[in-house]
Image (cartoon, rainbow, N blue to C red; front, side):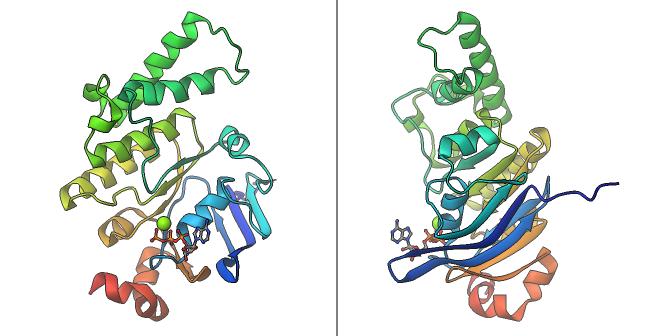
Length: 254
Ligand SMILES: Nc1ncnc2c1ncn2[C@@H]1O[C@H](COP(=O)(O)OP(=O)(O)OP(=O)(O)O)[C@@H](O)[C@H]1O
Ligand SMILES: [Mg+2]
């Protein structure tokens, strides 16, 4: 049997802003269907790492292999089309449009990538059906006709995940999915993310500060500090890692 290949492989990824190394020679591999978390202090370079994977920022050096193809130099649109989705630390929504339209636009763009000026009505109907299915899986179907700005903060974060799902990712990156939520909302979101991972057959990488979510959801943990990969491993090892406790976990868990 062929050994299973990683779905994502970062090799010596580096990026500096001026003299500040925000990603410093970072290498790791993520296997298909893994649920992986990236943790680390504020400013450690977590979001910047995501920005490079999704083509929002170009690394200075290193490679980003997704299913064996190098993503470096590709546009965000090309990377999305290859199957890498992303939800943002601050939800990226059309606030003045309806909840349904926020998802439907993404579904439509997935259906017709030729961008013809005239689309068949059947496309619109299919996109509407798909968008409602996604809203349903997020528990947001009852808000379909509301404008996105009317949603509570937590629901806006879920809607942003929905937009990413509409583009049918294989690998989904979530930047702090539970930030700004109450403990109760965090718990619900954690269970929802696990359900989405299963139902949509995803490989997940998320960034998170909430330790209940980190240790309740992740199968593997990567720790960034000042742009460097300080440690990686299963949650139970990372929890006991003295370097990680000193650099980060001490203050979070205390
Ligand atoms: N476009 C930019 N230009 C200059 N510096 C930047 C830019 N984007 C990020 N940085 C800097 O890079 C470092 C890493 O930022 P990043 O947003 O990746 O941190 P983070 O780990 O996601 O932090 P947080 O947990 O607070 O979200 C910070 O020092 C930040 O100020
Ligand atoms: Mg960040």
